[in-house]
Length: 542
Image (cartoon, rainbow, N blue to C red; front, side):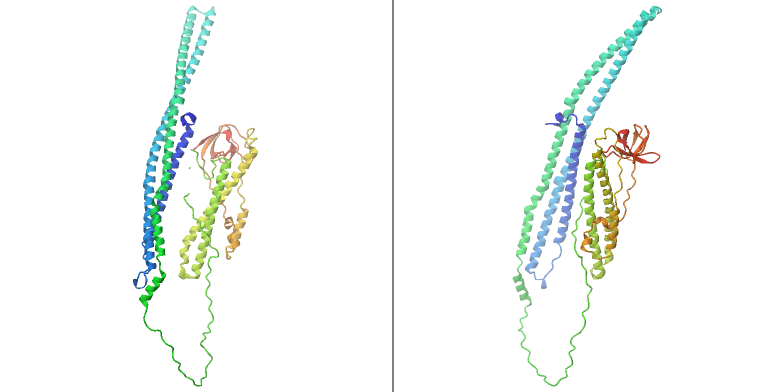
């Protein structure tokens, strides 16, 4: 199975697929580069740990515990060296090689598609010449027929002179000759075009497609090899890392508490005899002993009780932030069902990030309380920048959550509307989508409750409260700019709610593309926005 035979008419599909393959190759190279940076940072931190000063025992005598710790630090240094080796091998054997190969593949792909477009252009030019010769032949035939009819009419006219009749016959003969030449030219042009078309579809383009297939398969082979190098590079250092770990294990078993105790005894044993019993001294005589005042009688002073965190939360940290069809933030370039799924995923991700920031804020607040009650543990003011940054992240994520909730509600309503209107859409334009902003009344009331409860000590119930109830700011969507322009092909009244009227031939600004429901949002030049049927427009994107 080859592309030239099976995909002979899928030029654009192959163009997108080969571009996707190169993009995947570039993404993998970027992933390996980031992995290399992680390895380098990890090795650097291990080096710092491995070179820290060790704690020496009394009189600088190395106890077995001290010797084992020094050995562990040496093994950590060796372990760091292996991580550096992994980073270096990944950079040289994967990143550099695949980057170089990616550039070569891009040049080869560009050359093949340029060749294919030239072939298409040549075939189109041949077809235009064929159409021109066809129209010329048709025109000459009409002229010849007209000239013949004129000559015949003059020949039968008794009032026509002989010179006029003769001239008309000569003109008819000339037109007939020209029509015959046009016919021959048209036949030759048709034969030449059919030959070029057969060569284009059965030879020229299949060869180009086969070259693209070979290029794409070679790219896949190199990419698969790059995948393998990721694990092979790791496996190469496993034996040495295992030796490092074994050395740490040996160091752990080398700790001898009894021997360390014996060393301490030998160093600090005084050799004196233990003191004898104290002799009894009798001081018997009358004595008036006052009540014992040895008791201090000091009431126990209460100490400020340090209130620790009631329940620690596990911290979760985001990774890489976190593209032919223009990709929009609300995924409106996708079909409605796909848009809904993607928006749901984005909303869940924002909720997780928001919960993490809320946990971080609570932890910082508790730490600040501890610092305020026990200043020797830290300066409360030093936590203000982190708290401010966390609050800013919370506000930003809250706005994003509201934004995605609004988009999701609109997408879900559009999906339900499409299911009901699918049968009637061929007979008449469907009703325009009327998207209302999501109901935030519950979240606003929840936010007020969260504000009031924040002044009281946190309880188990308050910690389990949904994160949406901790904020009460409204989300205001920024005004969008036109993404293109369009021309009305037909007149539209726009009598229903949410629509806008337009006149045939009127120029409009395109504000939002059709999301699969048959309607497009536009704006008039003099102001006013609304929905109109997509089939009534001729659209041009920016």
